[in-house]
Length: 374
Image 1 (spheres, rainbow, N blue to C red):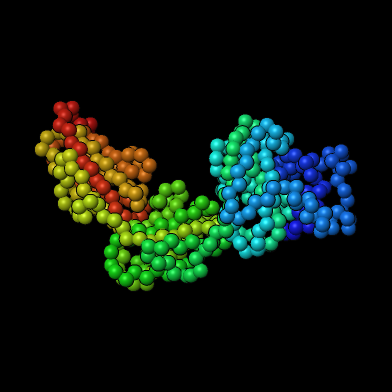
Image 2 (image 1 turned 45 degrees about the horizontal axis):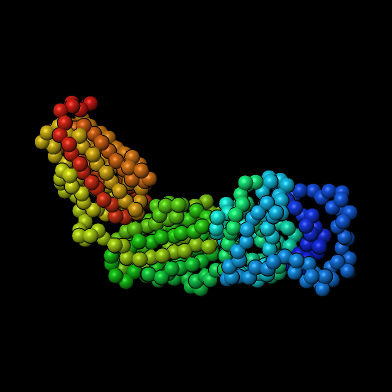
């Protein structure tokens, strides 16, 4: 529990002798430190003395930027040799605060309560405050060789006070372990993209709607974020926002927007593939089937790319059966096969049947006299 008087007493008791305590968290007091530490009595816990002790630390204020620098003169963490600086900050109960570290310093920012219990440490700390009072912010180098200037930015995170997400407007909320259910109203049929992003946990997004419609996704937006792109009929939908392992806490953002089509606005979900050509298609859980006809032996390269889902490309025919998942890098697919003349079937789909969205399929053919390996 964070209380100004309690924090002040700890600062009086340890003062500069607390070197290394904040980062190591549990280093024992030496005999010399114990002798110097005053016992708790009316004098040491008196409010004026508390105020005086807090004045010893530079104060941070939310929404204000503070600059500093870790040098060889900064306090030493005896546990790993890194250097650190301490600040005091007053925070209010039920406030969601974000404290971030930027600049040349390779390091982390840590937030402690009045009992010097570590609450969180990372380049960006985001936390819901349980009790009003004074807290300690510690900026530390990543290791014994980390020095340099830094900037601390802090803010109070404003959350959306609603249970409905509006198309085109970000929906910021806080997840506390359990899943959140958010309403979405689609008024006009069309292609839409839904994203759930968080720096605090691995997002998992699901949607249910009219006529038994259901989709879910974990990492299609990259960096563990979730994305669902699909064609939606008008109606009422329910989004379920949770963490991938049902144990996430932190801020997340939902965003729903119309999905942009390729430059020509044309989608081809079947038909013939042409040499050295490309097409755009829309995957929605079922494989899309194309035909490829070769008049001569060729080295054929197929690439399937998508920003919406993890792609999977397959080709079969004339005794050939081949597939690829991530050969083009990331979650994109690439197949290269030497093929005899004939007709082949190309299947474009997702690695998971729950994926959906826009993709691009590219075809390259190079005549070759090298006999294929069948």
